[in-house]
Amino acid sequence: MIEPWLEGRRALVCGASQGLGLACAVALARRGAAVVLAARSGPALADAVARLPPPSAGAHAAVVADLSGPDAADALAQAALRDGPVHVLINNNGGPAPGAALAADPAAYAAAFAAHLLSAQALVQRLAPGMRRERFGRIVNITSTSLKAPIPGLGVSNAVRGAVAQWAKTLAAELAPDGVTVNNVLPGFIATARLRALIGSRAAGGETVDQVEREMLASIPAGRFGDPAEIGSAVAFLCSPLAGYITGVNLPVDGGRTPGL
Ligand SMILES: NC(=O)c1ccc[n+]([C@@H]2O[C@H](COP(=O)([O-])OP(=O)(O)OC[C@H]3O[C@@H](n4cnc5c(N)ncnc54)[C@H](OP(=O)(O)O)[C@@H]3O)[C@@H](O)[C@H]2O)c1
Image 1: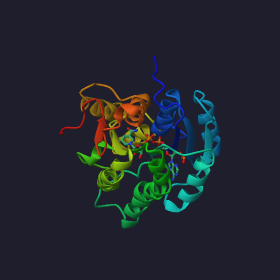
Image 2 (image 1 turned 90 degrees about the vertical axis):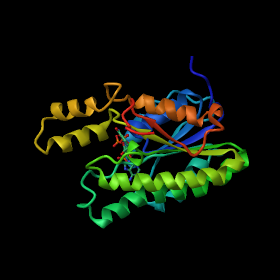
Image 3 (image 1 turned 180 degrees about the horizontal axis):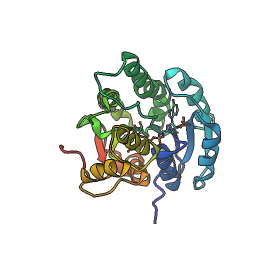
């Protein structure tokens, strides 16, 4: 049985038209939340909304928003707040392009920082006051295990994940007195379009896709790629009343792959 942890709660999930964001939206909706899904593609969002189980109250909605920087935050927050307070914010965005840290143009670092940190900061600034009034808030950032152990070939991503982790830890202490938690979920290798693209780009270096997959699987103690629903489950738990005393943590969901604490 799935516990209705989030009955009567409202959530905004960013990057929710596919992959991990969509899995988070499904997991929150299954626990009763009404979910506002945001991404750039309107048709994909409409399909995603149609796949959600109905909420305990209210309705799910889709908002087209480009979160490549903070500019869209105002309109997105206003749209999400139209039908009531937003108790849950999932910050999630497309991953930066792969490549060596040294080879990346400084503009690529700036773009990743804008998409992953500045847009999240702008949304938190608009939604945290309502969470504080409600004395209940959950902010979860989808980041990467690279903030614990940098992943070779993902230079820009490694850098920005570290920045997001420090930002979140700082916010967690600022918001804890008002019942608002801030946590990071660190996906390992999870079977989404992003993972397929990363495998494809490594294979372009000369190996076959099969070889790249075998090497990646060999690095995962659980011996398999993760299912996006497994990220959704972790996020739903962190957003539940059960997790009210958990804040400022980095939770790897990686089949044991991260080689350190
Ligand atoms: N999958 C993994 O194994 C893995 C592992 C570690 C970390 N991560 C990280 O987790 C995040 C999600 O990964 P994923 O695998 O779910 O990726 P994905 O399948 O590529 O999905 C990305 C989602 O973000 C949306 N998006 C992209 N750019 C956006 C923008 N500028 N504004 C608003 N929405 C945007 C996309 O929709 P639109 O294109 O319609 O906007 C889509 O819904 C990424 O940051 C990724 O690097 C993934």
